[in-house]
Length: 206
Length: 206
Image (tube, chains in turn blue, green):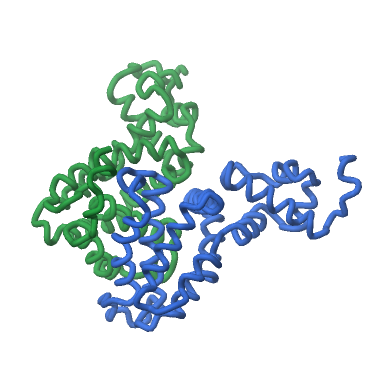
């Protein structure tokens, strides 16, 4: 590759260039359709350099979702009083899905995670570290991890129906009405009475 | 194919044989990994015969999910009083996902639908005809289609977290506790106050 001569392999700009190509590929071709070789071609670098930076395809996917998933923007909504936590969380979550810059990334990651176990594991790890653990840390009621997961299950379900499967009328309803209907359900998961007394620690101790 | 000589092409048993091979393939290889040729090989018939019965891969997937998805078993839970509809629905839904005969099929269909737009369209059509429309028909409150979809969004979200992504502690909690926590949210969607007055028919008239 004569045109690569001036570029120092291994420098940070090259890494960013590869990562941008990887994100574009995961978004447009999904996890199964993305290859180290294809990303290298897009970034105009040698495949060995992609492996040097990211190890393998899983490493590349992991770096791509960490770079592109708006987890920090979502986690910002955790700040504030607990009684309006669901309202802030749902509003921000729907804003991110509706945003032209974040929506396609979220869809690509959810697609990849439901289609590929390796991608599911990477998404779970990111969700746990960056979202579920910080969220649980802000909840003052019993079984905060289960509460956070129940909230997440409703949020993921709305995204599946509205943005992935695109089922009408849920897909075409204004976002603020979707938020108004699901917020009370999510607030109940976060701070309401959930009849979880039966769980003594067997499940949560894992 | 000399061993096929005694089998009459086009008879119903041959169709069932092909369909069984197709279901097995969609469950084990997913939608992208399933081919007309591969299914024909598994069923020991000519690929032309698969096309004769099912037209193309979408037709095969459509027939496979109609044959294997336990929609009738789920729809049975709609029968009975509206005040306990969510309880019956959630209990039956989790029973189906936990069942060794239906769980893998449900997972395969949800995988396929989140990974492939064509599969998503077929699942949506089946959901609408066999589940959402009959469910909405049993609801006595305003905006029954939206109510049914919101309930479906929570059910799909639970399946994603518990059976597809398998996030603990939600994945390892006893099913009856999961049911106890999500049932009130779903009952609210079906029969509660949802602040949907703003929707005048613009979204529901589609």
